[in-house]
Length: 90
Image (cartoon, rainbow, N blue to C red):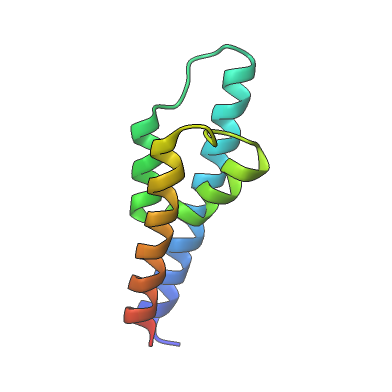
């Protein structure tokens, strides 16, 4: 594995852990009626590469699963990242 590949995989792993954590944290804040994480932050995290963790968090915590925006954009981001990773790593 090249250095670029290693750094890319570490980047993707960190962002996906972050996306998962943001989903968990926002769901927890919603239950406690605390200040929420903005939808823009969640979607930007997905766009930057954390979409797989975000998708996993959405379904495990049943968070944002009734919002059409999330139901369309998060899977689209996953498809985009699968394509990008396939293109770069092949």
